[in-house]
Image (cartoon, rainbow, N blue to C red; front, side):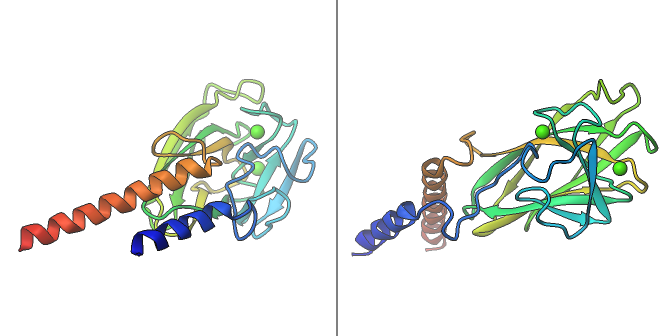
Length: 215
Ligand SMILES: [Ca+2]
Ligand SMILES: [Ca+2]
């Protein structure tokens, strides 16, 4: 009976149309939002100018033609007029490992030369990433790819990128992608759910084993 109930629940979850109570990770390359022109400063708390993302701290600069993007035509300076950041909240499967890949460079207009970014996810330890911008400029940004891993602690997770630098010249960010631990692209709901169920199964097996060893 319990087995049938579990299958029914799984069926109902899979039948949910995308968008009903669902917030998939979106706009990792920052190509969707208000037209930034050369660049547009987006104040902390603004959750509408860059689709899916909320600016944090003082502000960020939404970069258009001002410098070479890593992907497409838009990217982010994590320091707008002063120290800022950006975050997005999306659905996750609790207990599932996610790999976040992203590209960093730096605003070469001013100090510091080495830019620092704290990347975090709800319930997970943050990790500091740095980028040395000394040999680059706006037409040769030197974009480099980095990875941050987190295990989702609940049905939704907030992923955040926070500048650790003072001033108006921060780390540049572009092309954020979210993969499950198995390397399945995030929109593949089937893959997510299968991995999630596998994780639950593993936990249940571990619990059984733990009980067995106590007894
Ligand atoms: Ca982009
Ligand atoms: Ca700036």
